[in-house]
Length: 104
Image (cartoon, rainbow, N blue to C red):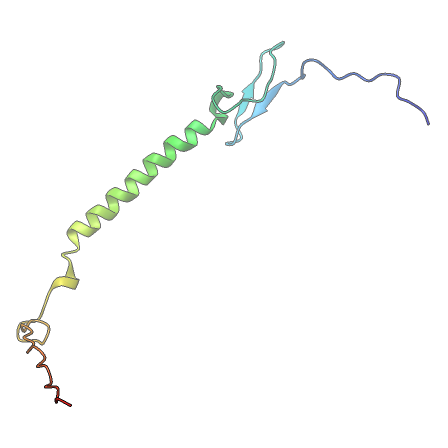
């Protein structure tokens, strides 16, 4: 079986530009190294997850504010009662009387 003669990989990736999630072209300077960004490392331009979290928090705050305003201006129609209806009448219950037990 033939063995490959050269087993080497390039030390630096030769990349002209990167493309972010919006399709924008991000130029890469010559001779710059590329590495995978870890959890707490900076990432390239606008491709980092920090932008998504920031926009998501703003969208969540807007939705909460809209729901709060709708709740405030709705007038709570579920709590209104019609005068004279059984719902508006006070409910008086007579307590249950114990039944006498016959001695045996």
